[in-house]
Length: 269
Ligand SMILES: Cc1cc2nc3c(=O)[nH]c(=O)nc-3n(C[C@H](O)[C@H](O)[C@H](O)COP(=O)(O)OP(=O)(O)OC[C@H]3O[C@@H](n4cnc5c(N)ncnc54)[C@H](O)[C@@H]3O)c2cc1C
Image 1 (cartoon, protein in one colour):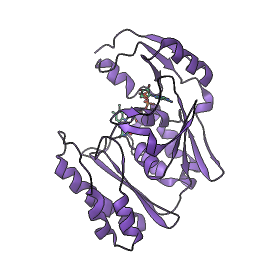
Image 2 (tube, helix red, strand yellow):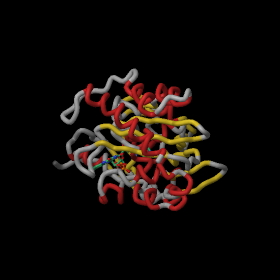
Image 3 (cartoon, protein in one colour):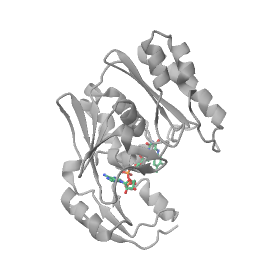
């Protein structure tokens, strides 16, 4: 399908993008990789009055480690994250996850900021951001990931707010992301991330609710000395996933338990 008519403007700085968003008003949208927004526009599920293209803002495309934190610019493409030696060294789980996003075309265009701002329940980076207590930095403020994801496709971003970077802690201990899907390039039916950090485990779940989930009951059980297979039984505690064509709620809860056990065990190997 063909999208509804819209205005288009190209920004070369965050300041200019912010001014353009204010000028166009609430119905304007940021355009990054376009791999979520454009399909929605073609289906007319999204009909923004204007697009503000941020692809020319070079300073948003960067990766650096500063003061024990890994800074990923909002415009950094999945393929860049996947291949970055800094990411592989400082937060290898993020490089692993980036390599699991979509297919080559998606990884060549899609961005860190786009996945975070789009807040799809099946998005992979939001899980990592939540479980590691990452910060989402915008042109206006810093938002803790736990306060950022509000509901399905809903974040605490204001209409003229632009994600500039996501700041993760450095963590390079045992880790694993398991993404359960039918085909290699599909979105997760359920995903589980496990990361050992400062002696304790962090466990995150993808696509088992409207927002990413931190499996704190599993983390606590592991902290108290439970074996992975015992702790993983708590992965479905409090979950109320919606069913879809690919999986019923019960099956998603089953997957959460099984994949959590596997993720911890594989991380330990
Ligand atoms: C076939 C296919 C398979 C995919 N598989 C996966 C997958 O397995 N896992 C996964 O996580 N994703 C997957 N994706 C989504 C992909 O990662 C998208 O790139 C991502 O969801 C959005 O990033 P984008 O840069 O393309 O953003 P866009 O599509 O340009 O924007 C998405 C939304 O975020 C907003 N936005 C973008 N950047 C910013 C910013 N800096 N500040 C504020 N708002 C912003 C836009 O206004 C829009 O509302 C898939 C996409 C496709 C087409």
